[in-house]
Each structure stands twice: as C-alpha cells, then as structure tokens.
Image (cartoon, rainbow, N blue to C red; front, side, top):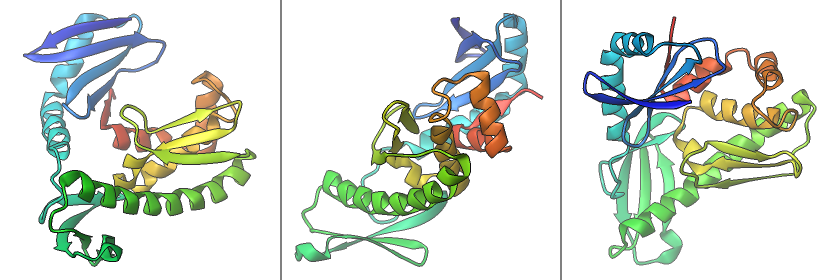
Length: 233
C-alpha cells in the first residue's frame, strides 16, 4: 500500500509492506524521500520517524542533488571511480587515436577533439568506465559464482535508470548498471552477489534474503550505503 504524505514541508512516499522495521531512503536524482514501513505502522509513527531523521534527510538530499548536477565533462569536474573522487582534466587533440580516458594519479585525463560536444566526451568516459567495471565484475564473478554453486551463462553492462542490476532466472543472464563504476567496490560486490542469489531464488522471498545473509552477512549495510538508506533502531 502506497501513501503520499507531507511531513514538515517535505513530500514523503510511504510504502507499507511485510517487513519488520521502518526504513528511510533518499532517492536520486532529485532527493525524493521514501519510507518503507510494516503494514500496521500508524501515520503518527511514520511522522515521528521521519522527524527524528530530518537533519539526515536534508544532508542526504543536498548530497544526492549535488551528485546529479548535469555534467559538462569539462576541466575541474569530479568523477568518482569506485567511490573515490577523481578530478577530470580535459586535453584536446585532432588525432582520433589519442581520444580516450586514462587514470593519472588522482586525475582522469580525458582527450578529445577541441570541437567535441558534451555527449562525445561523455561517450569517451563511459567507454573507459565500462572497461574498468568489466574487469572488476569479471573478477567478482570468478570468485562468487563457484562459491555459491551457480552458473552465469552470460552477463552484460548497460545504462539503467532505476536498477543497479537485473537477472533473467531462466536464461541465467545478468545485466549490471554502468553507473556501478562510480560506486564503492563493496557496493558493486553487493549487487553482484544479489543478482547471483537470484539464480538460486527468482523472487525477493524469505529464502532469497536468507541466502544473502548466508553468503554476505553485511549485505544490509552495503545496500544502505548504495541506496543512502536510514533504518530504524
């Protein structure tokens, strides 16, 4: 059951479902506030929970919105590489073979045409990010798939708007969001294990979460870091 509320001037989406505790999220890209609550939780309890974490909400909204300012891929912008901020340094060249991105110390050196558009520079960065993420995920799959006794027939990377990953249970196929290249490695690992668990259990059933706890006991902390979630204590 979904309900829209306004608490101290902040719109809040409340989703009541079969869970045991209240969970608070600040969602990208606009800082939308969402609360997951046990079915019988009263509106008063939800309001009190949100007000208790109001300072945290405001801080997270500022961080989320700052991260989602449209990029121009120009000198001085910060680009996270697996959670670590790097400074973008743009060089120009008219030789196409020079075009691309390389890591140099704490900088990402992007070389493009002097007439390049924002979209062309973005494409160069995404190509580099894809290569970095492919290497990381390939190593994670090599470690986790045998340990979990699952077989991944194929996996791919693509840009996704609303999911970090998705799994086709029947085809044993996994898709991962290119945006994971900017997330901390512990969060990337969480998503990989999450999708591998779906090869053992297609739904988010109790068995699924038991499997997550078995293979990755700290999965909830990793998910909270990935999704900027605050949980009731």
